[in-house]
Length: 498
Image (cartoon, rainbow, N blue to C red; front, side, top):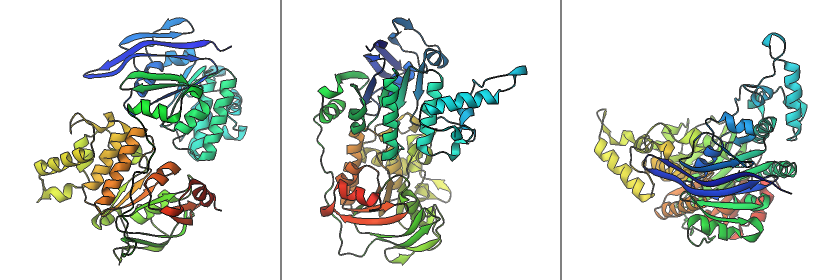
């Protein structure tokens, strides 16, 4: 019989000028997967930071196995058996797997020296619980795939004898097959009595793995139910506070009788992109999809000039572009919203204003003097146009939700008035409401005549926004599908190389 492990009673948390959580209540039982869902800014991260000792609550109680606990730091929850795996993995990539798992807890032998034999034994035991063999123990973390690094994070949690593991978007960087491995591991942990709090925007995963679902909106619990007593649409409607409809967000405006605005011929890059060719037409939304590792990002970054091609040719409006660099391609009317906004996109310590205007300052500068009023007005227009939610332009971008950070990066691109916009995984790690807003923005941009290339791993996203789809497998373009021929099954066949 499952026992009550943690009881969260009326937790509230306020920051200066912000009520992040208000009277939040929910329970976690042993051997249970409890999903916590909500839009970005709903309070999920704040709540998890309280449970893991990063923050203290303003009001309310945390009850652990029947006793009230007060966490003064993040070490105390770990001592009780509470571990958190963040969306951005916290491994030291230049250290070995065993050093990462037992960092700060390395076993010591005589004279205080590290006992490497015992370290390997303990590492092998921890890795065996997540399906990794002993050969991984001494490997440097940077040599592992993303999914293997995820498993090392879980092994690290289990080495702490974790009884409650909090997983924040654990599958956001995994392929479908890697996600299946992760979900199977979670089932095994559940059967061993470990409790899991599973945070994800991917509703299919939530309903596949979770027994109970708790929904947050604006810092409050607005719904909690057993997973088999509620539907995906009911969860999404509760999250956004209105009826959710899964619909197509884009009407095709592409002019296929015109000359292509972008023509890519026989591009190769190392062994990641192999003789790839495609065209992009005026006002078209072209999706490039495939499994993780298919070469989609590498192809577009090579076109944009971030990578040095081995061979191939790129034309914009019929003109061949040689010796491409990002600055040259921007001058030619191309802009890129990169994958992984926190690593490649935002400048976290800088303001919304500076993050938005940084690429376009040359357009507002005369004789080395920046016309601050003009550029600020242009930024304000983009903030209004994209409905970016920020207290002010001076707010540091790191304090915005994921969806609003993504909009700022998009506004940065639009400040350069592009005619070709490349968007790499534009909705990764953002909630369903923000996704719908991004889809509507893509539709509006195509209406304005901007041609868009969108790299996406989500089939529902591809089907919702694309006029035409290019599918890649292991660096090769394996299929091209127009809107009338689009289906998830057909796309997946090409994605697997069939």
